Length: 183
Image (cartoon, rainbow, N blue to C red; front, side, top):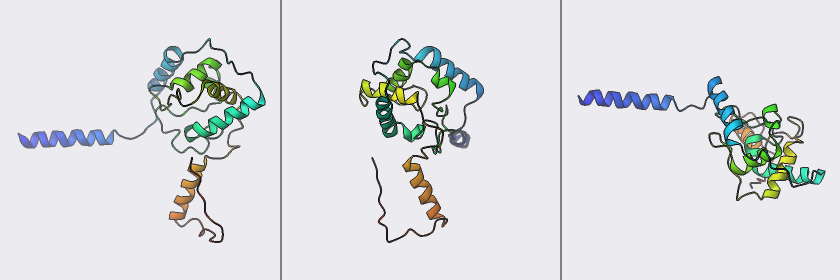
């Protein structure tokens, strides 16, 4: 009797471990998540952006985006250089996509403020001020061309470190000091 429980417990543990991979969601899972996001959870549809559009507002919104959002969305909002973006469930959206751009400004601010529960999108309420969130919305409406800003520095450093470990990069030039900038 004990052997049966040990075998059953071991089998359950193996199944649990095998199921722990990050994988792309299926089409039904994606459709359900999309329906929930667009019809149920995203508020703010009637909220108007109180920050007047200007190049300065877009620039400041971009600075807040670079500081808070680039780790998942890339510097350009299109996941450039973010190695895990497609493996997330649901995948990190390209912020230039029709699905995202079809949201009203108030909905985009609502998403920034409240996050999206079943996804990896965090809530920024209490971290970003309302004014900053509205400026990020202006930036989202004027994202730069895909790839034009390169990969976030943290992922470039990781890639360089991996190449160095594999011996793919020549030895660093010792005459130049190596500096890290972590925020």
